[in-house]
Image (cartoon, rainbow, N blue to C red):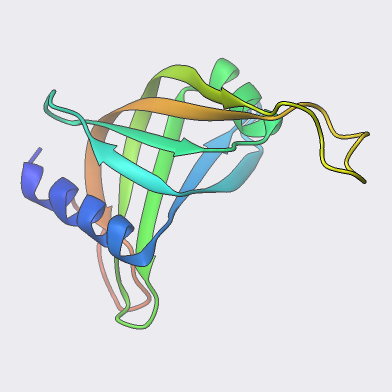
Length: 133
C-alpha cells in the first residue's frame, strides 16, 4: 500500500472535521457512525479513530472486525474510503452521570478504535474505480 493516500485521507478528515465509520454485524447488517478525528500511528498502515460510539458500533466490531472509514469533501467531490480491520477498542472516557431527560439511556463511553489499513480507494460522485490509490 502506498502511504501517500492515507496521509491525504487524514488531512482531509482534519480539514472537514469528521470521519464516517461503517461497520456491520455478524449477519452483515450495516451501521454508519460519525467520528471526530482520525490519527496516523507511527506503525505503517495503522490509524486510530475516536468518538462517542453507540453500543451497536462496538457490538458490531466484536463479531465482525471489518470496518470502512470515509472522508469526503462534498463541495469538492473529493474523498477516500479506507478499507480496514479493527485490531482493538479502548475506552478513553466514560460519562459521569446523565443529563436531565436522558435517564433511560445506557451509559456511554468514548472509544478509540485501533485499525490496520488494508487499502485506500477513491470516494466521490464522479466516475471512479475501486482500485487502490
